[in-house]
Image (tube, rainbow, N blue to C red; front, side):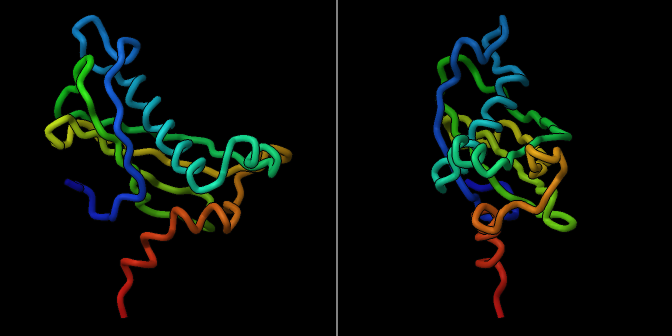
Length: 148
């Protein structure tokens, strides 16, 4: 069940682990941010952009402005799914807004992480437009949305 306005780009399933929870067995904010980063990295990897390949190209992703909105708790040992959705690519395509949705085992929306991603060049430490071969994977859903 997709609660976003956009088509999901990528989805993965996990189980809440001991290091993810607090003393009340509830998943903590740091764990949500860790899984939000993990799904972006996995998405890039599956599309052929390994860390090694991006390092060779001297291109990286930097995240900022994380916002977490909790609706329901994810609990220790329970399965959950994480869904990545690209919301927009901003001015000069240097900033991307993604949303990462967390669903509990009943497929109820549990938490949403809103994150801005910036592409940058390791050699100059400046923001840049992502290489077209990477950007097309984030833009793919936009092409399918436009009709006529």
